[in-house]
Length: 182
Ligand SMILES: [Fe+2]
Ligand SMILES: [Fe+2]
Picture 1 (cartoon, helix red, strand yellow):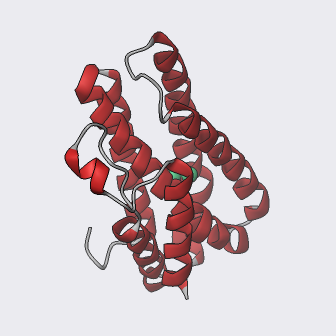
Picture 2: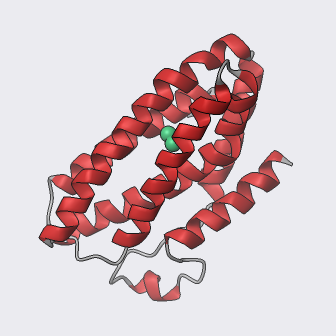
């Protein structure tokens, strides 16, 4: 992604990466699954928070019926974040994990499809390229500066002072995006 990427391209690429990470978690076990799940949680926390702060407010204001479209998307995001928080300390090889993970995967992928279809598909009609590039930069700032969560069982984990649970990642991402938006 370069500085001329627009926000629709950026978000769709993130949806693709989210889809891949869900597959990687589903198709692995043990330490590998733990690692992929960790990456997925972080990307989702950052992605959804950036959408809530940058993308949905833009859609609400600028697209026809934006208020309703955004309301449904935010409800879906709130639900996904609750499930992510509930799963963050789970044993990723347990049957309970797999059940909840599978449900989360279906919900999040349906959510991403709805965003692309009912929300992002209208952006090119209501804003010029420069505006959509600016929105992309705010989302990218969030991604670059958001805190990382430690990989479980690594040395850096113990030393990583900015690390925190899902809720902390979301809070810090929100702060970063608000600063980037000025
Ligand atoms: Fe979203
Ligand atoms: Fe999304």
